[in-house]
Length: 339
Ligand SMILES: NC(=O)c1ccc[n+]([C@@H]2O[C@H](COP(=O)([O-])OP(=O)(O)OC[C@H]3O[C@@H](n4cnc5c(N)ncnc54)[C@H](OP(=O)(O)O)[C@@H]3O)[C@@H](O)[C@H]2O)c1
Image (cartoon, rainbow, N blue to C red):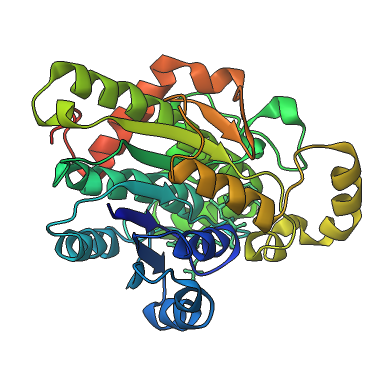
């Protein structure tokens, strides 16, 4: 029985390490994404395809989570690619941490727009594929890669989420420009606001949204399952995953705090179990997605190699639902899950 895995952001770091591990698993069909297809193909040929088990194979795709058109194009390509096979796992791993204020194609703040909204849209578009060709298949899984930075209690060097209402997370309030101002004043206000942009906070907030989304999705999928019909034909486990602190990925090399990394890395390695490596983290992610860790508690937060509690705020079901509803409005998807 083949397992079909979508891994976003498989061109480097944690996603690449996971793809390399899964390549060696028998009967695996990998669907791997990076923003550049050429780059992803090159990496697959060099690092992933040589490791493929005889019966497994890997397809590469271009996916830019900061563009709805790219997400829709990828979802269509996946539909064709897994026809007659269905989908078993989505690992929402791609992520970025911006230093300067930028926006997605649709005008959302880049970090939140890609890390959360892009993945939200993608998962919703791919969801029906989990219910195709289910006969004799094991349970399915959706893993949203979050980060310990979402939790103020973990006291990371990244400022934790701070917002009054859920809309503030998406639009970053100090970036808002008064639309009634004359053009010149708008530009001045925008320039002043952009200086105040805190890319690290935008990152921790996007990672909190990954947890909110995983919990809300898990509850809704459980509801579908209980209601029977097509949604009852398969159990889909949804979890939020914290890969730990891994200083040697591109994310850290490009981060605002990159200058602190050489100083912090040895201290964190010695004093905290937050520190990990791509080898260790990908080993555990591989165990999770191949069902070696069973039963994976549905709707849980998994930190590197064990289940843990996420931040207190992340369990707020009102906020989870508000984020869901807002994300539906922005992506023009219905609030109810339909498969
Ligand atoms: N490293 C850590 O310490 C750490 C800690 C906690 C959580 N995380 C999380 O772990 C995940 C992987 O991070 P990493 O450390 O492995 O970083 P990485 O090496 O920078 O990998 C990030 C991946 O995301 C892809 N990507 C970036 N922006 C994208 C976009 N707009 N659309 C689609 N794909 C995009 C990149 O592909 P291309 O550039 O080829 O497009 C790349 O494959 C992220 O979600 C990150 O937040 C990492």
